[in-house]
Length: 308
Image (cartoon, rainbow, N blue to C red; front, top):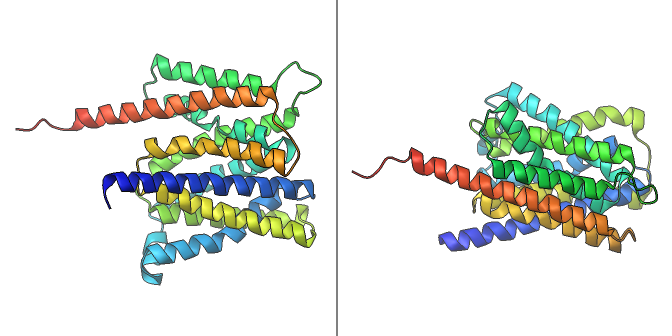
């Protein structure tokens, strides 16, 4: 397969990932309307997605022996840290999803690249130029537009906004840990153990918050788990075919998916503030991703010795 074909394939897989995650979010939002609590969502999303991940690992690693080798963690405590932050993040995502309109919850989740820029400055001591700081500012202006502070009639729930922004901050923390974890761990191990952690933590909460739901609600939860597992695999596979700077912008299709599903399934049309804020947040995130690509490309050029 040529390089151009691989990039096209990577983009196609990333679009499939965005579609899968949009379906997952819509199913979970519908299940929340039926009384499913956020910790339950954490469990069912991981539990029903885990078979999809296991099948993918077995198929791509040449059977059981290869799968065991790929899934064996080389830095167990690093996986524990990633799982603690990741499970906390996914809980906040689902809690925000239960409290906010689908489009608003999805839009706020895309402030994660903005928070990742800030964390990389403070934790990794990366140099952040004035243009990237400008993108961060644009993103936060978008947050203000979405959350509509001071508007009594159309204001979003404060708790939902808080969980949405905390989810984005924790997701940014996951991004930072994955940069470190990816240097030594196989991607299959990273995905598998995170799903195991979500299933375990979610199962521990079921005696306290779990309840019996109608068959159609369980069907939504099964669908959300399968869609989430497929989305994870599509996203991972896209990176095996194209650079992250090429495919990452297509993640923002999830905002469009959230608007469509929220309007179609939940009869919640997006407000002008939601659309305008989403545009600003997307612009800030896309510019941040582009500058990150430029920075890495320049670093690669500088690290390459001149031909003799």
